[in-house]
Image 1 (spheres, protein in one colour):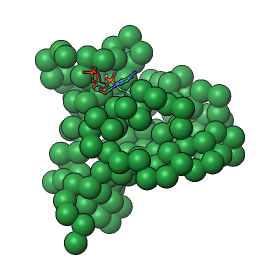
Image 2: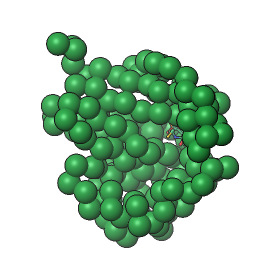
Image 3: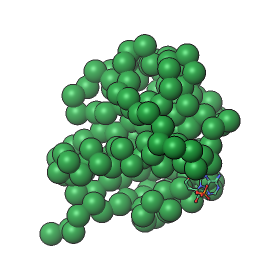
Length: 155
Ligand SMILES: CC(C)(COP(=O)(O)OP(=O)(O)OC[C@H]1O[C@@H](n2cnc3c(N)ncnc32)[C@H](O)[C@@H]1OP(=O)(O)O)[C@@H](O)C(=O)NCCC(=O)NCCS
């Protein structure tokens, strides 16, 4: 574990690097949907938080969380492959969860590929429960798993 990495809100200057990380680490083998323009729209969206670690030319990590009513949705999340298992992902997730709590969210939802053992372990370590496997969730070809974490009691 390294000391807490500085986490900052993304600007449009980070959009291309986030999109490239999404293609390499998350959307590999699938159509590339999180391109620079879509990431830039998320950065501009008042109902979405995009956070990063590191400078735009050398991002260590990013996370994108959207807020809708009482649910928050972790849309996209990755750590640079050379900087994993150092607590960076945990720090970014914790930052986003703190904001979701402060915003009054009851629950955080997230999806991952069924075969993504690292992500399933990671989210499990952070209190996310696996809800259901959905066949062909990703572009009709890859199975996905839906997870959720309750931030406060479900009244
Ligand atoms: C999943 C991911 C974000 C984790 O980031 P990270 O910075 O390595 O995570 P941390 O160092 O904070 O790990 C916290 C804990 O999660 C678990 N974990 C993380 N990576 C793991 C792996 N590859 N295998 C098993 N458990 C893992 C471990 O319990 C770990 O604690 P430990 O290192 O003390 O054993 C990173 O592997 C990643 O970017 N993967 C590719 C993109 C992706 O899958 N994104 C999520 C789905 S959208």
